[in-house]
Amino acid sequence: MNRFELIESLVPVLEDTLVVCNIGIPSQELFAICDRENHFYMLGSMGLCSSIGLGLALTTNKSVVALEGDGAVLMNLGTLATIGNRAPDNLVLLVIDNGSYGSTGDQATYTSEATSLAVMARGGGCSNVIECSGETTAGVLADALSAKQASVIVSKVIPGNRPLPVVPIHPIVLRERFKKVI
Amino acid sequence: MANQSISSQLVDKLKSAGVNFFVSVPCKLLAGQIRLLEEDTDVCYLPVTREEEGFGICAGASLGGYMPCILMQDSGLGNSVNALKSLVQFFQLPVVMLMSYRGSPGEPVPAQVPMGLLAPELLRLMQIPILHCHQTMDLDNIAPLIEHARVAESPVAIFIDFQLMEGDA
Ligand SMILES: [Mg+2]
Image 1 (tube, rainbow over the protein chains, first blue to last red):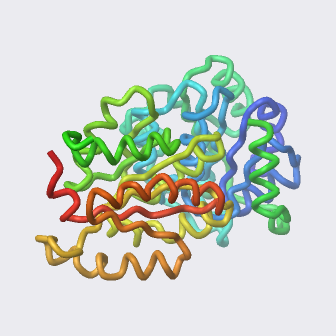
Image 2: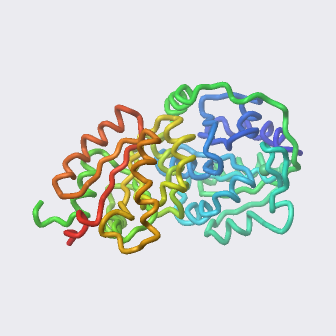
Image 3: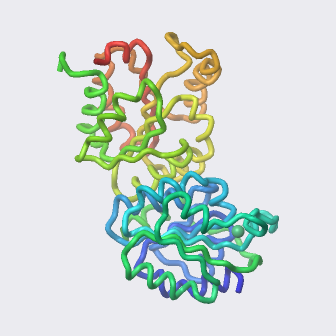
């Protein structure tokens, strides 16, 4: 299973949540599979998806899913300590771990070698850390959302990207339609 | 008010202007405010590990309907340019930056000076409004600046310098 197939399997589970989606191809794939007002496509600010998700989860009662990538978390490792200590119950950090910088030409990340984001998340203080296969992730996410406790899910998939255009929504339109469903 | 510490006045001015969400990257000049925020049950406060992360969290809080503030050194601006440009300013989110004006007169650490000299220029280049608080009366301009952040849908920067914080009890 690759990221596109994983996102397809997640879409039904994400319906009643607020989704903050990682920059680049992950956002393009989510947009192509299913565009909804509860999706915040990052458009810029590489590495900050988990941080935006944390700030949002601290200021709303709705469930927030930060749809992150392995390369992005590696750029902002401090987020695992902040989330490990301050995440509210309504935050799920879902790291799509394909061991690859997918949006920039599939250069390998260190998670394809010795690095484990699940171990790093636990070391950062995160208590509910689940590493799972892409195939089982939708069920794991549904369980994490109904358990209503802060969770980190590291979903292992293979690299691969759909050739898709940039998300064609103006940032202010995106901001306003997202704020309306918060 | 006369007996109130500068830190306490600063936090009160921010809160009464509607700021209700704070993150911080530490600085000696910000230590008083951080201590107050740690104990403050009216607002959400959390320390962050780096300025860029803080801007991400503030952006999320702004989407959530809060008025966020990041406490940081001006030297942290260099770590934050992309987060400000491609997130906070791109989505036009009001965020208050309460910045210690390190590298300005009174600075004991030479290595702080280069970023201190650059920070106001960089903010102007980035089109971020600046309020420089040099004496206590300057704090009265905080509320109008924060209202301006709302109207302009823009980040705004407040510099607090060594002379202002010298009087902090
Ligand atoms: Mg990846």
